[in-house]
Each structure stands twice: as C-alpha cells, then as structure tokens.
Length: 216
Image (tube, rainbow, N blue to C red; front, side, top):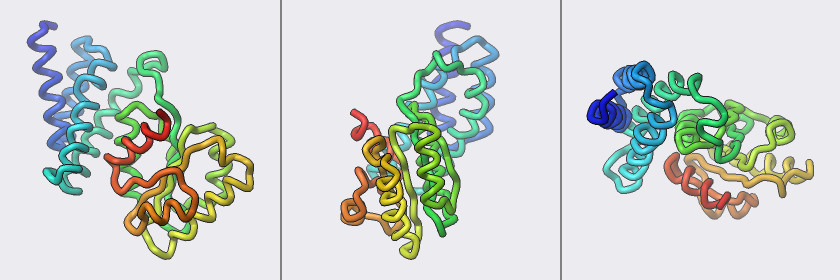
C-alpha cells in the first residue's frame, strides 16, 4: 500500500466519522484491514481524531446533538468491525469505566454517547445498561475494579438515586477505590457536590475530558 493511498484512506475514514457516515466508515475500516493497515493506525490516526474533532465542534457550537449523535453511531459501527482485530497489546486501555443509568430511569442515549466517546479515547467500558440498582453498581465495582464509575439520570425524579448509589458504594467500603462522574439533563455541578461525586459532565465530549483529568 503506497503512502499516498494510506493517507487517502485515513483521510476518508476521518471524514466519514466526522460527518456521521456510518456505512462508508465501516467500509473504510474493512478496506484498511484488507490492505494491511494496522488496527491501531486506523484507530489513532483516523477514528479517534475524528471523534475528538466532533467533540470540539460540539463544545464550540458548530455541531449540535443530532450531528454528534450520528457521528457517535458511525464511530460505534466502525469500532464493532475494528475491535475483533485488536489484541490487548495493540492499544493498552487507559482504564476501565463502569457506566449505567440509575434505578428508575430508562434513558440511554446520553449514556451510550459517553460510552462511545470514552471507548474511542482508549478506555474499556463496562455498560450496565439502564434502570441499574445501587447494588448492581457495587457488584460491578467489585467484579471489574474500574478506575471510574459513571452514572446518568435524565429525570428529576431519579436524581435522588444518584446520591443513594454513591452512598451504597461508600457503605460497601469501595468509595475510595473509584472516581465517580455523573451527568444527565437535570444534573449540574452543585448537585454533584451535594451528593459527593468527583465530577460532573454536561455532555459526552466533556465526559472524556473530566475522566482524563480525574485520572491524571
């Protein structure tokens, strides 16, 4: 594969993810693998830079939620093709993150976008899904030993579950082992401080930055 073709393929893959073109992005990953491009090159020279640019545009107001969502879907589809070709030594994880929407809440779009952004940034994600009771978070911490736990609450009625879950983690003697980040439509910095979370992320892009900052 010539250097020019190599560069063209990476540029095209970058653009496909940036603009949320899932099918062409998947085809680009497949073509790159067939041509012998290392999975880590596809990841670190095209996919991750594209997702970082999506996050930058979202934060500056150039992109809005629909654009971010379709870009995240293109990234997820690309990662599904790429992941089986990557060994543990190809791209060492930056750490494990346990994610879940708290008990009583079944909203998952925001959580799923955070999953994609964090995975794209190099973290290993354990997604517990939605309507997750405090006991399941505790079990997941014991089982997976994550560096970070992320909790989402979309409804004002489920916000109290965030505090209850953090308290359950504390009562289990696990609070000092993890950093806790929370987010969701009704959540803010003041609430994060009130319930004893380590950080608050208003969107998927900032979740990556907050996570990296807490682990620095």
